[in-house]
Length: 384
Image 1 (cartoon, rainbow, N blue to C red):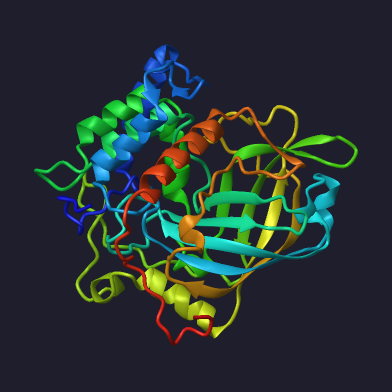
Image 2: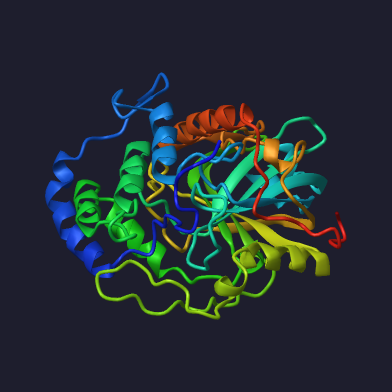
């Protein structure tokens, strides 16, 4: 399906203007007491006012409809490889994926946003989704991003953030008044966005580390339950991204300067990842962060204390990249609630919201003829 949106204009939730964040924090504190809480039940979001259909409709309204593509994280590339478990994870979970051994994985790197033809930017949100397939037949799917917390605590807040971040046709940038109103209505957002905007930007997908922001309950063979968040920590040394030119006061970001990598290659992040895998396997450590009593498990906008115990439970390796096509990661719905025995959902309402929204996105794109992806893997790639 063709779209009438400008393909050159991405929507970007971050970075936001710091002065707006500070102002919004003050206002947000005043109105926090009257902010309605989120409820998810029976397929409805936010007290029946927002359905999973509504949330995906909002993505389409903001970004346009691109036939056959995901409604979020539309621009991506498929990868395959394996996970080598060291056995340490069996202390907290009986899932077969944590037993010492070697299992195949399918993954997908992507950028946040619903526009598959947008130019890459180092200020975008990087994402990594993985499907672990141990021999016992159970599957574990996880979708992670390179930010430390989620900007809001519920699906209704995320819908509101999408609308507040939408570019004003007159300026091509988000309306500061709408963003200020959003921050005032969602008290959790200003501190979360402060953490997100303060994160170090990675030079590419291969040097970025990815976090599963929601908490889960891990259950071991003795029946002991532990609250857990996990991360994929890059083995390649971190390389700081080149900061974009300073944005004028009151504007959220600056366009790349002429002659920058973006100006030369609109897919430079994906092309660099494909070239990296062609040179040799790219790896990440799967690290579990073990929560303690009182750590928030129902709000992904809140970080856990930095001194929590962490456990390295194995190494993820990708040694093959390929363009999205039938039968590979294109057809996987990376639903965060596809879990093996030994990993259970927490009380975080975002998990059910994500699962329902992903299902709607999958159903819609599966019924469409897919147009070619912007990201292509050249035939010279070793794995192609």
